[in-house]
Image 1 (spheres, rainbow, N blue to C red):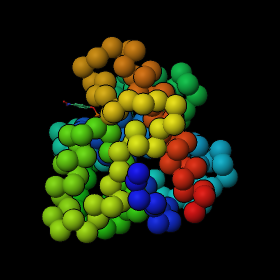
Image 2 (tube, rainbow, N blue to C red):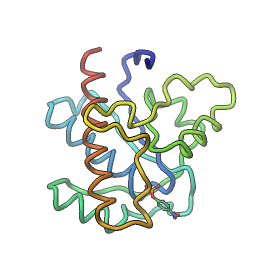
Image 3 (cartoon, rainbow, N blue to C red):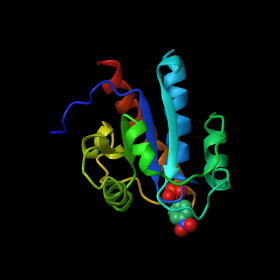
Image 4 (cartoon, rainbow, N blue to C red):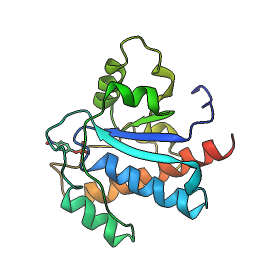
Length: 162
Ligand code: 4NP
């Protein structure tokens, strides 16, 4: 059982490169928030645990998959910083590796409670992680989006009930 969230409104999605999973999560969650008429209530962003792709737009395969599903694509990759842990109320990781890395930035453990996995919010999937689609094929990108839509809807519902 996860502890309840304490009124988070600033949500940061984190993956490895910030060009596939976390920008897609940011785009999907922003759309869901807008559809719910709650855009003014949220600040939504994404970041990666590495700086390799800093400044790059989302991966073209991810962008094409999102566009086909009707999403608007934007974003520039950046690396997560220690200040992000202070600023954001909820930090959502994609897999065990980036979860461990984000926890590791939080040296004192003061923010551990707001670092959560995307799959912990899923209600239709029981996957253990959002898999890295970077070296896979199109099926991987479609599955990632399906997981993200499920998890983001779970996040929004959990925050709406606060
Ligand atoms: P992401 O995907 O973490 O979902 O943005 C990846 C992006 C880049 C690399 C790996 C995964 N890479 O090895 O450069």
